Length: 305
Image 1 (cartoon, rainbow, N blue to C red):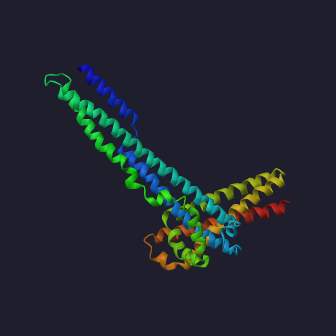
Image 2: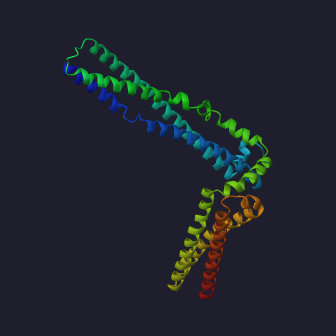
Image 3: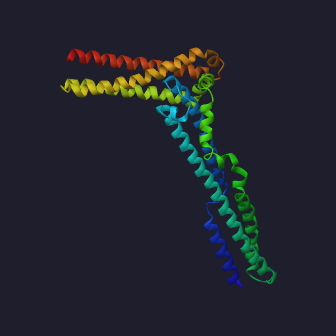
């Protein structure tokens, strides 16, 4: 009779090995990935709305998708949204596969459970293997509850909206285009300040300024070294690179200074007011330092040349 126990145990271990990735943590991770993919689609739509405003400002006068696709920013926004939709599709399929495999596992566990129940009916209490088989039976009951829950993951977590998102993507784009870009511009303007002042976004742009300043200073130092070696063309190239980076810093610093002025109430009422003010001041200082560095090297190279 011990042979039957070994067979049950081996079959159970095979099932558990096959579906080893089906855990509570993996179920949570799988559904979370899908939710994040959906959130990225929503962010992509917001980005597309903003791009229609930018496209209008850059001269797009038509109202069709073809008209707007001539604008680089709008085209890029469409590509990003399309990519986000594809990722959502992939994550939905991942959830479906996870659930389907869990459902298969339930079937295999139930099959093993039936075999064990049949065996126990004919097994004597004195059987040395009985306690082990009963313990395995209890474990299978527990596993069936877990895998039964995993099998429902797709039904409970995948919204119909997720499944139809890609199929309706062009409709979504057309709906955004149908909205007046002027109205979108007002919406963007109203939402721009709060979003730009959040820690994540503010720190992102502050770091761009800080790192940009380091790159400007490094390029300026290199330009001086090359000029001293008589490599004027290379020195000019370094200076051009420094000037381009400085321009990027200036655009960020100027934008944030304007946002702080135009939305002073939002800044003053923010719980992170001190962080916002400090970050914008650092952006301004980085811009000033970068401008001085470029101006200084420009003057030096001009005199040397």
